Length: 292
Image 1 (cartoon, rainbow, N blue to C red):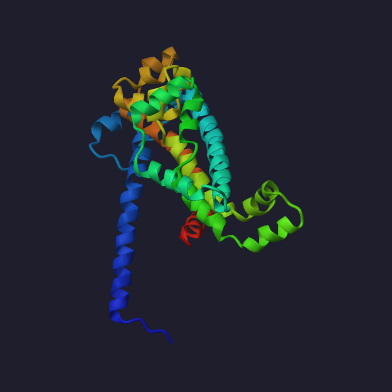
Image 2: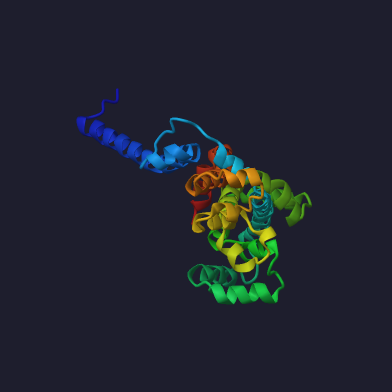
């Protein structure tokens, strides 16, 4: 019978208290965003710290969804996130699989990859490369320069190397090519790590706003994070959103409630997707990080 000592129970309670405090600190910003975004104009002006609205209002959300620029940028961001994540996973897995095999110059290629982890080219050289390749004002400028993350590539390669070699050898004896082995054996066994790094890449694309500011002059191609930055930085949120409804313009809610509603809407898709991938998340990262 396992009897825990007094010190062990105290340690458990301290851990519980710490985790509860940590959870509150992390949840509170979302709770505050939610409360402010649904409050009325009068209550917002009256309250210094609003924790729960007494009277609910959806005016801020009506403003946002009446904005053509916000809806358009939301569609652009969804498109970039899906397409960019597929491109990331394709290039990362194919290169990682190639490097997991014994090929000529493997050591030099791995050293080159490690070099890019320690020393990046910098903003101006990267901008010049994007410009000279004709990617300016194209959504591909947000996808192709970051097609492969070196750290993710190394972890995925380690995972591929941990797979039983007997599977590949048996397939080779049966006449399967490397491409068939990769597609029919390696990828089906790699679902946890694909889900984990797919989530990493998707969150990166969803939250990426600096590349949009740097490479895109056409406002119709701006992702949601650039519009969100305009809303937060500019005091006139209606101008940033491009609201054209005269009735809406005559009854503007406080810019702060519009900012909170916009932040909540732009964060919600990732929060919805995460629970469906959470079961693969820890498993995928742990499996890939073992066997260095």
